[in-house]
Image (tube, rainbow, N blue to C red; front, side, top):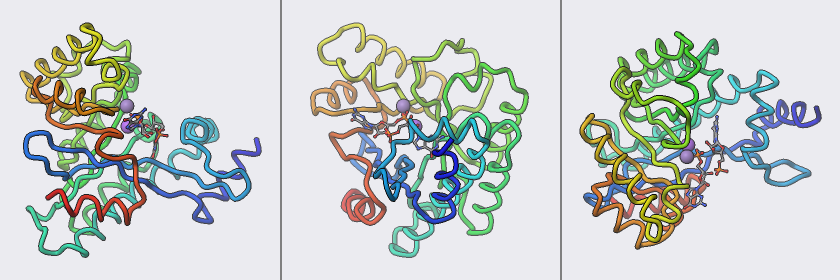
Length: 260
Ligand code: G
Ligand code: G
Ligand code: NA
Ligand code: MN
């Protein structure tokens, strides 16, 4: 597989980068959260989307190395922000960057160990990071997943369920596991203002989450109408092209400096 060979080179030669998509706090208009999204600039083929190369990385056993690189790079970005804006020191954690994790990273890899060690080395509290996983990972009945989630919770690293509402899993895990945030999948947000069914689902997710002490991010918010409906429904955070596309670090820092 050519892509596998290229991916090894990409990691070694710095062709990977992270973009950051801000997550807006609807209650106060501030931005203290963002999602890190992996980008690969291939020297010959141009940008290759993560939906194409992440599955290859998983198959070839490269995902742990790439995942560790993602964790380290996201933590380094928080540390740089702290250096650039030393006055912005809310409890030592001026920014929370959430990173997507693949199942493999929870069931045998070393990247969770690496993440916790790196946070400690830089003196950053756990909530400077958050980990996004999908419901499917909780279905696998891997005892390793629950154990890793407990370790993250003990270290103060919040866990987000990504693409919430699209999986097949039962929701019992929501009270069993220490889940910080649900991210409503963007398929429910797209037609929110015209499809009463989508609005009902979003409202029900928000109400249920809040009763369980869980926060809610709406993903894929593209219009003001969607955002104000979500705000009316009590949604905590908005992420989507309306506020900002995923941005390179410098542009991301410039943008969020104006929202705090
Ligand atoms: O940014 P974009 O919409 O192209 O992302 C597409 C998909 O790739 C998303 O589902 C996202 O979760 C996944 N993805 C992006 N970055 C990472 C990453 O660092 N690790 C993993 N495992 N998945 C990622
Ligand atoms: O699967 P995951 O939720 O991690 O994927 C996040 C992806 O969603 C990112 O690749 C990002 O580019 C994309 N995304 C973020 N906001 C929007 C939006 O408002 N509209 C659309 N269509 N995609 C979005
Ligand atoms: Na995600
Ligand atoms: Mn999603």
